[in-house]
Length: 158
Image 1 (cartoon, rainbow, N blue to C red):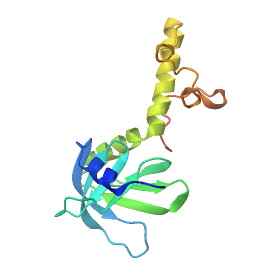
Image 2 (image 1 turned 135 degrees about the vertical axis):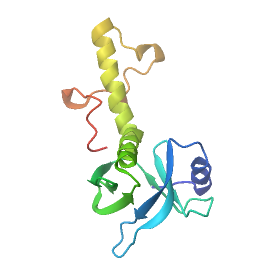
Image 3 (image 1 turned 180 degrees about the horizontal axis):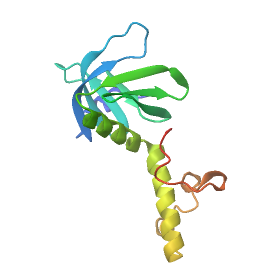
């Protein structure tokens, strides 16, 4: 994927949905858990050395699986590289749950599924397409695939 480093650094400085110092282990063999400042901004998870202002890395939270590893840790693995897992250790079970929930909801695909679900519900209740007024009701990205009915709970894989 191509990206502009300056744009990513700028995005990393935006207000975050969540931020905390977490233990983090990268996907390479031999990686050890290190304390990192982790920030969730839109659908990017930035990580920083705790004493630096610029991120040392970023994960685009699309096409990934977020799983609880135990009560205080979770992992992120990308669907095209399932063997490469990033592990995050939290201070509490509650904090871990909040991170998992926020990361799942941060993906474009989750938001798209929610939009389709609520669009269908509004159409069912009112008989009107709420996207029609914006001229985007026929766009492919807002259509239900294969006739499946999606619900906001379809979040195990993003």
